[in-house]
Length: 100
Image (cartoon, rainbow, N blue to C red; front, side, top):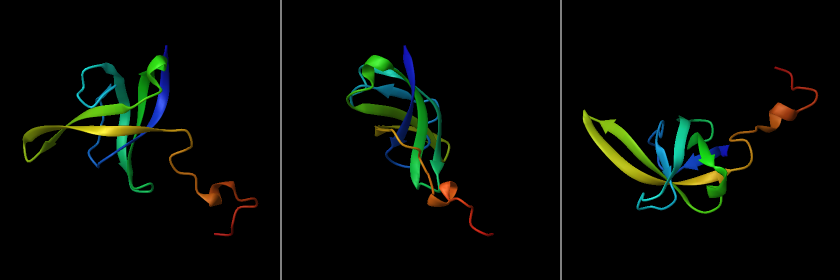
C-alpha cells in the first residue's frame, strides 16, 4: 500500500522524479516523488510523493539530481512530512469575502 504524502524538502533544487530513502546514505529506497516545485508563496521547496505506508514514520531523504551550467550534480536533502495545506491564507475562509 502507498500513501500520497505532502513533503517540504530542504534547499531550493526541484526534486521532480527523485527517489525517497530511509536514511541519508541512500541505502534503502522507500519510493519516489511524483511532483515538486519551488513555491514563491510559501518560500519552500514542496513536493508530493508516493511512499509505502509502513515507512511514513521516521526520517525521509531525497536524492536530487539537477543540472547547472551543463553539468550534472546530485545532493541528498532532508524531507519533512506536512499534515496541513502548504499555504492557507486567512482570506480564503473569510465570510463574506472582502471587497476587491
